[in-house]
Length: 85
Image 1 (cartoon, rainbow, N blue to C red):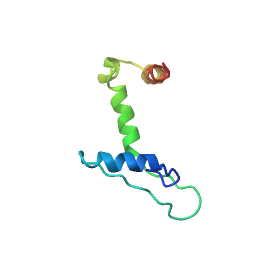
Image 2: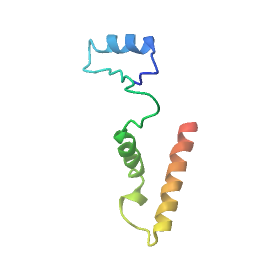
Image 3: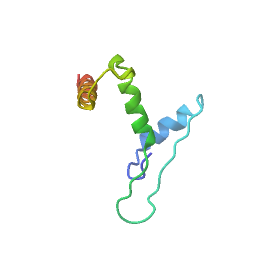
């Protein structure tokens, strides 16, 4: 959980949820001044997993890299549009 977002309702929900499930809630504190990039490797891995759900991306069907890039953009647009609906 981000240190700047302190939602008490979330803490209460996690506390109740911990009784029946194995879950951990971690509050990340700021270390120093200014903006620092926090590594979020799972975001990249999750995005690749979503893209690989499309059969076109499972094998390298495209001849040109520009075509592959276009198909990735089309797939991401499709994913985002599905979330809006």
